[in-house]
Length: 392
Ligand code: NI
Image 1 (cartoon, protein in one colour):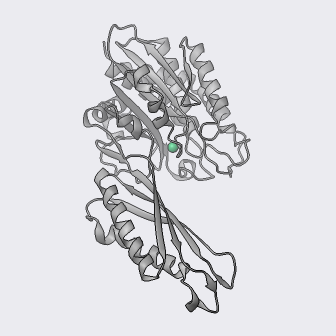
Image 2: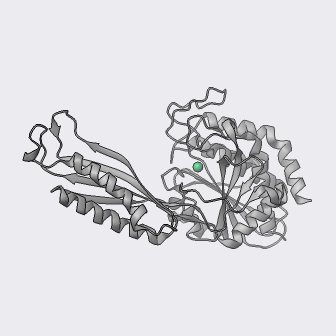
Image 3: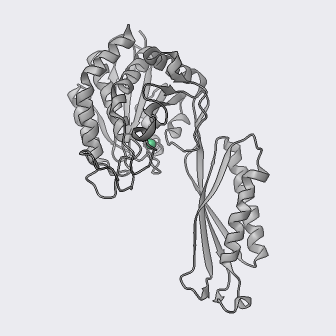
């Protein structure tokens, strides 16, 4: 049984992988600064006999492993390496030693699961084709995947399919969730500037009030999703910043509002842009103000292709049983820059359970920690998926 073999081999290495994971956790690095992590990854890949390409998208590392089972296609397995600018609240021995930085999303675990898979597969490359291990920088807002694509990832590594995995707190350890279709939302960011004549707070009639207008605008924007979009199409508009004024007795000249839009259907973004601009202009005009809005493209929605998602679910089911693979889990409104790889190739991005309760915690929480118990399962999943997709 292939599944049992991978699980046993992974279990035998669990202790070493746990140490790797904790070493990475203690030294988190932010987007595009993953020098130490990338060196750690490249060193181990070389130890497995691979020849890693370093420096793609700054700190990205990529290595290809040819199977000994004959000719076949090339597929990519991808992990992310960056940490977050969050001060860690945990006090255990492997807690962050870098002030203000923390592996609060488990990318330390993702890096080790993929390294571990490279170790397993390099020791037993009985597959037909090539597995490409992709360690990308800057998943957390920096668009590391987009930069890898721009720097020629697909030209250097003409893979047929791309696969990703993220740990999921709240999903029990030992389970997977596989979505056929949308799994993570797309994002856009906006910044609105309202301008008028500032005035003395005691003489509001001599100017215009950007604070009152900004408050009205925040309220009005709540109607974009609730009144202007199809209720069967999920979307979120959140205003997350409102900056105006410095004094008790001055009505300021300018207010700045910023926020984010999230949705799955690409067509919704154009609609939301239109609505935000129309409402923004209308509210600004009602208060006698000028209005400006700037848009920042975030990440596209992460949409798994049906056939590749089915392969992931089958590989997971072979390891943990059909009853431990959730196929009907609702998608997340969070975003993921694996979507940039999926814009170019079919593929799928799965969730591996990080556990429930306190240990499972929440992604991006200062109390979060990756669950080391799932390292062998994650590594076995990658090995299982690669050898099934590239079966000789
Ligand atoms: Ni993450």
